[in-house]
Each structure stands twice: as C-alpha cells, then as structure tokens.
Length: 96
Image (cartoon, rainbow, N blue to C red; front, side):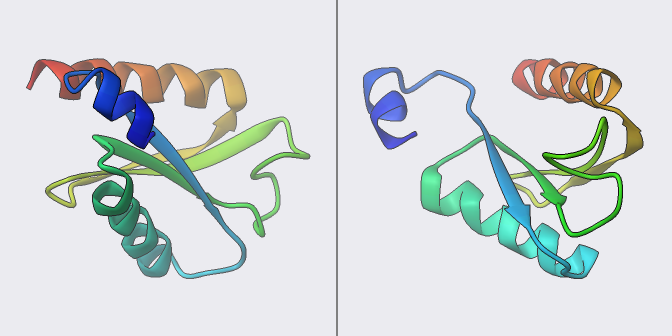
C-alpha cells in the first residue's frame, strides 16, 4: 500500500483487516490503526472467527472504518451483496 500511495498519492485506498474472535470494539480499533499505519482511506474489517464470516463461507460481514473513525456496519449477507455495499460506500467516501 505504501508503494501505491507513493506512486499515486491521490488514489483512494481500501485496506482489509481480519481478526479472530474479538469484540466489535477491538475489531474497529484495529481497523482504525491500519488507517494510520498504511495511510489507507478506508479499512474493511471482519472477524473470521464468527460463523458464516470469512474465507470458508459464502457470506460475510464487515465493519468499514474511515480516518475520522466513522463506522459503517455491513451486516451478514451473501459475499456479492457485501462487496456491492463496500464499493458503494467507497465511491460515496471518494466523493466526500
């Protein structure tokens, strides 16, 4: 991400963070750290320790965090729907 930011400073970057069996508050705090560590614009975070979430499932759930620590919860849904909502949110934030 740092190389991308250096090469193209205006590129809108969405990072991803996974955790395992943490509280929502911890998940959001870890996502917020990534904003500053990686200079991302948004971080989409999920807890892969939950049933129906993550790599082995057809569904997912995300908490999307921005640099002002605004959080949008995308509830458990089919991965395609979660992805659509994430893209919609990223486009909206790019226009802010």
